Length: 423
Image (cartoon, rainbow, N blue to C red):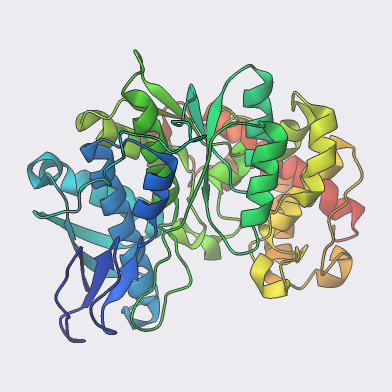
């Protein structure tokens, strides 16, 4: 399917594809919209964004538009899409040499075939007023930290501030998490800058729900903040993406969940690809995951401010179906079970309310059954036999530390399932 993204796109018919208006309201009900409120928020905070970072944000928004607008059910196998994406940027000559690299990274992330074209006439960054309103401060800090409202980013933010860092917190606005993000930011680092943005993708028709490409917008929002710091930084600015290594690798639990059927939101190979593209276009920002070789349980145990973590942990979110259960954890999806296993490893009471608290009664639910099968296979054959197809030398270099982290993560999960009577 063809997706065209620019500030003033021309309406397309169904055979031609879908057009999206970026950063502005569409001129027709047959044109989608994305990122319309972002310039307003950037101006409000006084973020001075460089043109290359703004172009990358435009690219990321176009990717999200395509991920929402292209339905998987229309593809030959019901999953893999052929996406021909045209995006307007300020400097097409900067990005055209890297179109194949971006397409390859996106293909790994979403499991689709991406063909990307860069056109001229892209939106420019918002103009920032030279005179500040009374009481308004220019955003400052020495690093950027993604703050989703989840448990891992909560620990990441706590640890950074306890180390004496002054991060800018960056959040993707998500229904059910916006208030939580603000509470975490204010509690952990009072007075620090907190940037909340939303891609607000609205295709003109039905929306695809799988959203496997969503992590690129998280990185783009972080880059936006990092570029505002980078103008005065003598060295590269760090963009911290806190995620435990077990979920980051997200090894498919069974053979039915191969490839992009398991999400790769913070997979180190994808991060490496994006890092290489940024370096090639002159973006001096380093993406760092300090917990790549920690399980979620280890992350909790080693948090630098246990008192603060104990106060906030139960308010964090992990559930993959959070909105479907009235913004309550289901308790039986893979992220919920990893959360429950981690809290068990931490040794603290679990104050989370779960829709399905008794896992033993959910043993036939697909996620519970799949996790149990993975635990049994690792127990019988070893973690290398189970995970070798997903942890390769070609993608990651030495696979040993990744394999060891995944093995410890499975151990945490097995402890939970055994204590619940599932195993």
